[in-house]
Amino acid sequence: MAELTAEGGHGAAPTGPEVPVEPTVTTARRDWPLYEVFVRGKRGLNHVHVGSLHAPDDEMAVHAARDLYTRRNEGVSIWVVRAAAITASSPDEKDPMFAPSGDKVYRHPTFYDIPDDVPHM
Amino acid sequence: MHQETVYDALDAAHGGEGQWAFGTGFDEPLAGVDTTVPAGIDPADLGAYCLMLGDDALVLAQRLTQWITDAPELEEEVAVGNIALDLLGQARLLLARAGSVGVLGRSRELATASIPDEDALAYFRDPDEFCSTGLVEAPNGDFGQTMVRLLVAATVRLAVLDRLRGSRDPVLAAIAAKGVPELAYSRDHAARWVLRLGDGTPESHRRAQVGVAAVWPLLADLFSPTDVEARLTTAGVAVDPAGVRDEVRSVLTRVLDQATLQVPAWPADEPPRGRIGQHGPERTELLATLQGLARQHPAATW
Image (cartoon, rainbow over all chains, first blue to last red; front, side):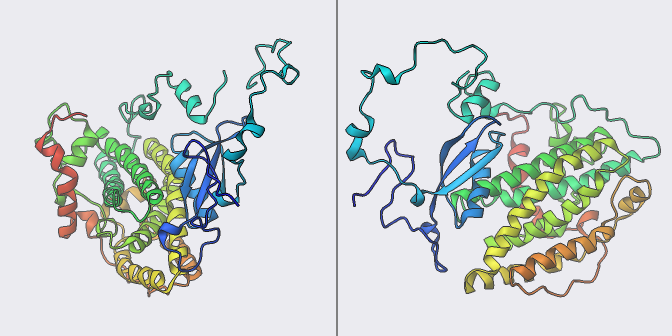
């Protein structure tokens, strides 16, 4: 299986053997698992990926996320997930997965106006 | 309208110039607040009491700050820094309250007029004028000991500030109300670490137990009221520290039990020491670091 790496440098999903899935009793601190952090800024918005962190376990990951990513009132809700639990698309499949579909006009509903008071579209 | 991330939203709310990180609240700490002292309260006592609470927060903040660049993990460094900043915010308000009722000690002999009261009190009082307790002044020890001390200090302070929300001084009551959720978080953070270290590896358990042994004797003078606290408790302004002892003991015992740590014998009450200015070399050394820059460059800004 090809090793998956996220594009852009800071995203989810390196899944090589160097990323432990379970902490063990003798876990050294550099072996703390990587977590991806998602924060919801306001009610009604989606959770958005804001970054990643290392933590010894799930509870401490939420705690650390609160300190690292919401210390200036950015959020009302935090999700964390082990990076190793994320299945990512592979850069090798870039063309079939993400080829521009600008020529497929039927996929782009551009033929009507969105009213001004519809937010977040 | 379309905001990609929570940070974009914050930026938009602060003028859209990418300055939101610096955006909040460096005005006068008590700007717009009615600082009139209610009838029947001695302003000198009130100011002295605010210094006790403010100095505890200031000194503990300074201790926690010593972990910056040295914490076991980057994530933990930020957490400890946040807790220190929360405490510093409480200290700022409390020292400002002391200044607002004219309690400035000898700080004005050294501080120039342009320096606000709370900075004068923080930077230009000598160690014998501070009234922080030995609990917050003691050196950090290792990370385990730091978390045990933070657990104890946050538990005591939370119990006191929780009751102070009903203080007859409305300013003090408001400062306490702001501090309560912050301290609940600090206590929770410390408790999580004490649980994980106590119930972790044999080495982490051993070190946490050593930390408990080092911190426990510092409980001895925390629950004996000073004359100021006794008078203000009668006046409905302060909290009698003796009245929070049982709650503190119950919380600490519960956390240590669950962390599989042995709870040492509770030390016998002793008369106040730090609260009335008595201190060891630790306080002098810590304040020298805290105050050095401001004293050498009193007009410095950055």
